[in-house]
View 1: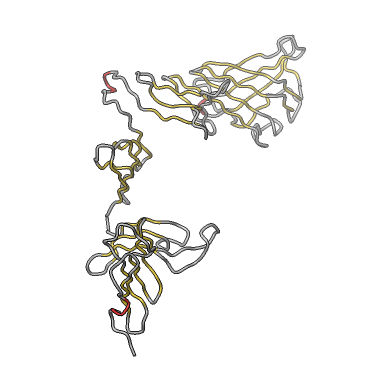
View 2: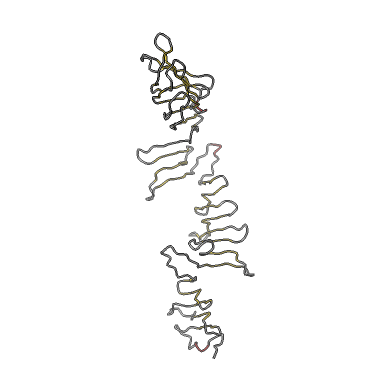
Length: 339
């Protein structure tokens, strides 16, 4: 004999241990309801909802549990499929929380409303709801501190917000800072203002260095003074009549440039000028004419070294009578000049 939709035969009396089971015609349970008036709950399941005979929702003394289909152990790399879907009255999903939205390993919170945003908040000690995180799929996302957006993503980077509202155009005191800490929370370095008008870049590591660098021959400008270093070590760096594999070091502070080159072998030993390729970057080249420096004046043969405006390096040798002489190698040398 088929059971009715509501199995009243299972209601014995209304006490702490009694349940009401609502079943379908096959006898599968759909809803299990306990005694809500009880102050001491003697059963684990207060309300259970079923789908296809499988338990999907459990409401008990500590809250609500949502059950998926998989029994995979979450402590191992295994996919999950538990999902809460938020739908409008027409049954169209408008949001979701759970696994399986993007994949079986990612716990996702998704807003399906086109142009919709996501906000995560909490009440403070005064009972006011404060935003913790806000995200716009077509705009900025932000992380908040005490309800104030402190870190925002922008189209061209990020914005860090301090607490001072002083006008920087009138030398107002500022307090915006980015602090770098290790895993123990100890401060290792910082970039920002310390309630003053000075932008500090600090390394708090004992005996640590502070390095400002650029890629290639880029320039670092400090208060209008340009500074840069550049090193070439490839096999073709000198080129021309010089051998390969020689290191060329360039340094510039303001308009003062220093060029250092290690010992090189010249590809011919006649009396003509030996010229390299354009190894000196544009930012380090003389602007009006080649600069000359006589190196090792106590040597028997004195090299005349020229940095040309085209970035090439030229060397020729003189003896003390003023005549050009043949030479097959060049010493290590450093040249400084003003551009």
